[in-house]
Image (cartoon, rainbow, N blue to C red; front, top):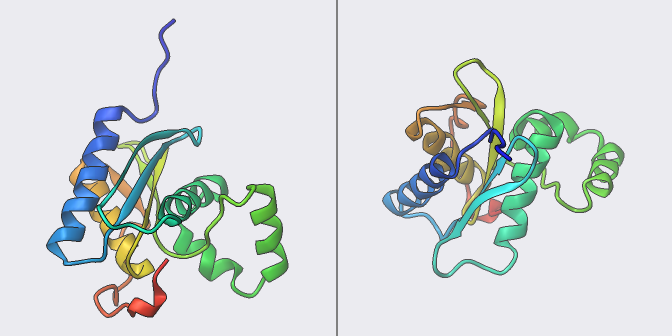
Length: 161
């Protein structure tokens, strides 16, 4: 049987490796990266040496939440900040795979179709998101959101997720 993949392993590996390269270049904390296809299946995951045990679960929750809700985890955070009950309900429905802070970014093809999502965890959330957006671009694809938070460099390390 032949199945069409929304996101190839080669593309996912390009994104993951670019995230880790950007993190090293920007002297970030150790990062964990998860790439999911449009069906929410993990295509690729890597973590830098020295990542904490929960970083995989956080990165997965950022990507899965973005894919499940249809917009970035930053947008989810902003949209749901005044709706904690709904946020809790989504977390329950997602069986814990829902982390509503920046770092979960949708991957779009040339036609604007969502073909997957990237989740990054390890540094401040805005910095995680920066890596995801630029790694998606490095793979020749489009990200949603298209631009990182304007203050990603100033993101406080106390905002680590």
